[in-house]
Length: 204
Ligand SMILES: CC(C)(COP(=O)(O)OP(=O)(O)OC[C@H]1O[C@@H](n2cnc3c(N)ncnc32)[C@H](O)[C@@H]1OP(=O)(O)O)[C@@H](O)C(=O)NCCC(=O)NCCS
Image 1: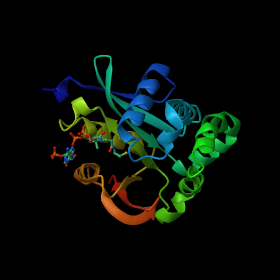
Image 2: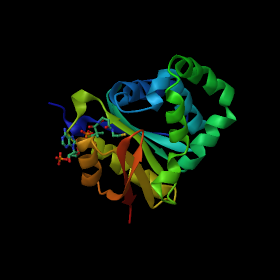
Image 3: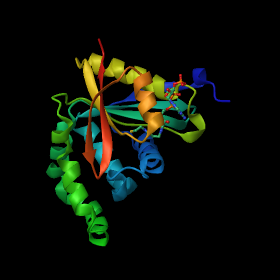
Image 4: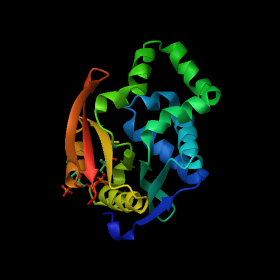
């Protein structure tokens, strides 16, 4: 049985290749069945993570059991700038996206929907919990909630008193998880022919 008291939490604001590679792998492993961005592969995700840190757009909180990464959360201070970040370094990202687009042209409409989904959210809040994952062997013992607790403190430290998070309606345990951690359902919208829920966490 995993003891959550043996888990250390570490906030990462500067690029740390070893940890970021593990985060990108966890992202691909546990969110590929429902995510669009994961179709572009681990290297795409890793580059994006590195650029988010180097542009001071966000921060990671890692849950560590010794050297093993058992979970992480990525908080972004202004997720409306993620698109600009990709455009700024477009040739680098295009190289990673192009092979997938060529082999699966059906991805193009999805790509457009992804780029413009912010408009469907109908909110002015730009701070966001972008991704949270705990490794399968470490779930349901409170590590995800531990990550959110530190994430909340980090947002507050940066003067941000609320943030949003988007999740598929059908991912019931993730919806439960967000509600359990104080997030309130704000709206629902359709993207990629699926229902998404937008939660807001008001921190005070
Ligand atoms: C969502 C996720 C991060 C939760 O991590 P976790 O470490 O298991 O979270 P916790 O142990 O702190 O769980 C807290 C609450 O979440 C909900 N929850 C977690 N796992 C659940 C499950 N298997 N079934 C139902 N509810 C669940 C419960 O409300 C739980 O509270 P409780 O223990 O009092 O019942 C984890 O399941 C995960 O990585 N899932 C895959 C990736 C994902 O869906 N991420 C979210 C979208 S980006």
